[in-house]
Amino acid sequence: MPDEMRVTDEMRAIVGKVMRETVSYPIAVSDIRKWAVAVYYPEVPPRLYWDEDYAARSRWGGIVAPEDFNPFAWMTRTPSPDDPPVSQTAFSERELGVEPPRHRALLLTEIRATHSGVRMRPGDVIRSTHKISGYFEREGRMGHMLYTTLSHELFNQRDEWIRTVDSVFARY
Amino acid sequence: MASPDTIAVGDELPAFVREGTVHHWNRFAAANCEFAAHHWDDEVARHEGFPSAFAMAPLQHAYLHAMLRDWLGEDGRIVAVAIRLRSPFLRGRTLTAGGRVTGIRREGGETLADLDLWETDEEGTSIATGTATVALPDRS
Image (cartoon, one colour):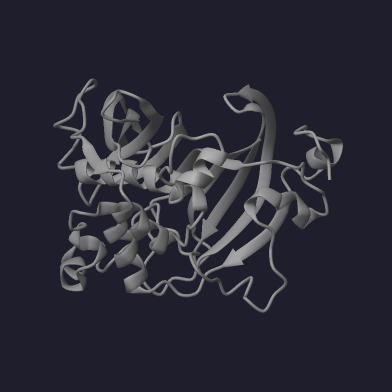
């Protein structure tokens, strides 16, 4: 394992390669409700996220999830709990056979989401591709930091694109 | 609710304010299965160089979505939201999210608004900055 927080040739070689796909279980109404309650707490979230009668009369014709909803929390269909464990975020390189640099801590520093307008709904099965889309190094408050951009593209069961999220993690 | 007829460059969105407590963060941890110890254990956070436990970045990103949605109403479309974390949202502080319209344009038959976003605490600390683009609901 490299001791320094530097981008190696091996790391550069895996940029843009899909490291895995994740497939959700069908989204439950209660998944959406819990997400909305958590985000809006202590206020009551908008009815579109929890009131089926209200949502049925809306232009959406039923409950939809907030755009930032995570359909992969807790457990996924793929990989399943029976599959070999996948790497933690900090060690994404390992999924493509590259040893990540040793680090003390990991921080999420930036999130960039682009939404298609296709909403996630109860019953949807969401598929996500994961890849490292870039590295850069910079001196920060915590010393020399290695920044890694992880890109996720989400699609529903009809292969409609839902959103792309770029998350930038700093390792130091 | 925001619409092409009612907004102008320079308009500010109603603020979205949330306390930084475990009551808030535990709910999000449960919804997002996000249990990194630095979000609830001050000692772990200090070991990583922070004064205390701090909020989850996806929750701060979600707060910006919620603020935009409250302003847009159900019919508007959130096109893009980017957030850059500047300082941790520390336990015991109060976060105020805000936004300002920086541009309005027509594209693909839609009216799009570009916005600058921010999150600050009560001491004036910049917790996060960001940008967003939304498609405004057509009222005509």
